Length: 153
Image (tube, rainbow, N blue to C red; front, side, top):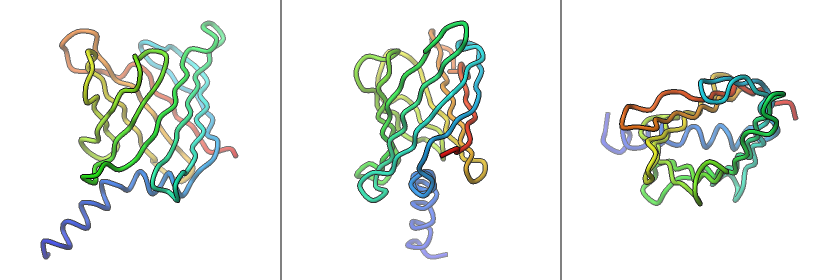
């Protein structure tokens, strides 16, 4: 395999999530659970912007016991270097936090006091998983909340 072919395959693997989400915009609904969150109902609106060069994800989690427990607005895009990045704003974080993809679907917090990562997968067409991992001490992050949603509109 030539170097240019290998580079193209690597770039395709890196940007695959962006391309798949750009091709499947809409509202996704489902359930979630986790150590921190407990059971909840999730809604994620996926919107393709700038001809698929970026995706916005508007995520809400609601439970009977806690009411509205999570509101998030995230932008998924490729950096100048070609790596995918998430730019996340939510009530739990100050300002906007940048997460950089370290492997397909795994985004680590680039800066911030909290060791955190977000894991996003599309196991099949119309299905999306979105998991928040973090640690309040210096331990490795562990899954605190995970939603599995299906496109409904």
